[in-house]
Image (cartoon, rainbow, N blue to C red; front, side, top):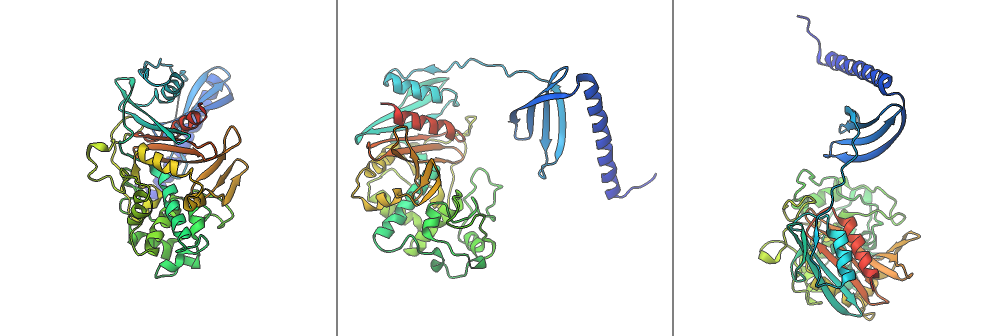
Length: 423
């Protein structure tokens, strides 16, 4: 029997596949003609893309999968079938809420999985109203959950910047100070990073550190500690953008900011956050860990309604580690209306123009509302939660939404803004 080398076999197999594919496509062309147009439909099961493809004689679904090198490793074609529209049978049982509010909430939440909870705070002229919902047996019902605990995800960044602002107003730091002096080693390539650039996402750092172990998708930040951040700063640090010239959202940057603030005061950032924010504003149901919270903690779900684990943070806590309630966040939002509060006012001061429609302060994103007023906004998402928060200082209004479902940020943001404009 003739033996072939591994390299030869691979080359032969590629030629075999090419020839078979060429013959298949030629046969397809004879049967259905040329392609007239195509339309991307969706990305299914995380493995392949489906295109509705109009040929001269038929409409087919062309399904293409790619390998890790973005090379085609799968192709199959079948008759195209329009997705069947299923009637949504979710029941609106929010009759106790004002009709306009109930309809807005229902329209944005009816497609969420069973066991979804939303906890909503609406503040108008400092008056707070709470609207909680839960979806059970395809029915959306009211529930009092303003004192229940959710992960708030990246809204944490606003609190991280608020700690920075507190230290600045206490004259313990300057926004322009570089973080380098708080580390006992030189950063790779002598790169210098300022506190402000971390708070407004203009540091040039990537979204995540290169040495973050991404294999643990259910709890990705848990094992990223002091050794890992030191290794990154000493040996792996590199900037993707020119510092102070480009906005580039970075979880790494916000996490590094919080960690360095702790180092600057010779404590942990979590303890600093407790003292500077939670204790100061009497936020008694805000936490830095999901441990020992009992039944007050609402379990997080993925977008299909499956219970997932909470996220744990070490040195990158400042990027997304807080757990809180809409009651506590409403306290924090109301504190923003006090213009004599210099530290919170500092967080809202524009520091960089992202584009014509958006600026950034210290973590707060500044949008123009429908009535041309500044809207201070941030959202968040973790493995089992989505959140959104918007504040209008001039009109003393705010909306806060916490949910226990991941990957629904667009819906939560839409709901947040719609409720902001509802009179």
